[in-house]
Length: 102
Image 1 (cartoon, rainbow, N blue to C red):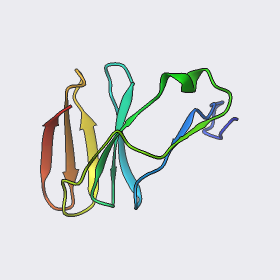
Image 2: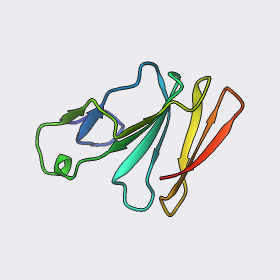
Image 3: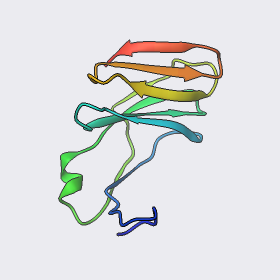
């Protein structure tokens, strides 16, 4: 399946699980095996990108995050992963920055 991103792109996987709008996304810069998402539902989720998505012709739908952290009192505005892929941070409308180990 080709999506319109202004260039050809094959849909690999759709991730569902947040209860509100997803605001921020950050891929692990080390190997791309996982990514974090931050949402208006006040959570940060860690998602695993299964290796088989690259070889299948049918896009997968992932409905369960590997981990969910309900660490903020208001919407999450930003998530980031440090270059080595071991430390992550999130920033929220609750005026907090949370830093943690992966």
